[in-house]
Image 1 (cartoon, rainbow, N blue to C red):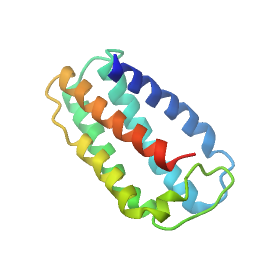
Image 2: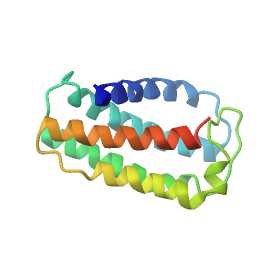
Image 3: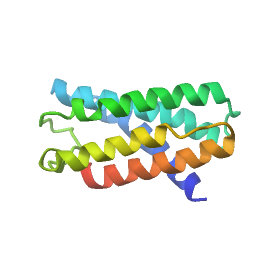
Image 4: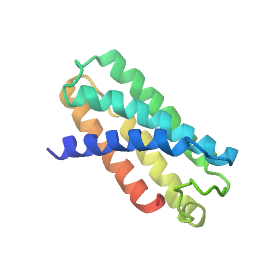
Length: 142
């Protein structure tokens, strides 16, 4: 049940991310929003498989996880310098606590590396991914 709740919350995040991008002026903010949008897209694909909304496909899951990991690896770089835009939801703690922020991105990368041989494995991985997203957004996103 907990994994399902996390996956549903991630789906809501995906929908709100698309709306948030319209009107962004700062190219730095746009870059991190685009990176997060890519993570959300992969998370949606994985979440649909984990919830049984689409059939489990190991190759597709592994491809989505690899993409998610690659985008997670970019998080410290796209947030390297503070940027301001009225539509940004980034908290200043990203730049006042850069080591902790980088650790959170690393935790997401680690969760994306979990093996997914079966749908049950994917559900476990999504639980870990969802927890890292929730923790990071709770601390670093308005």
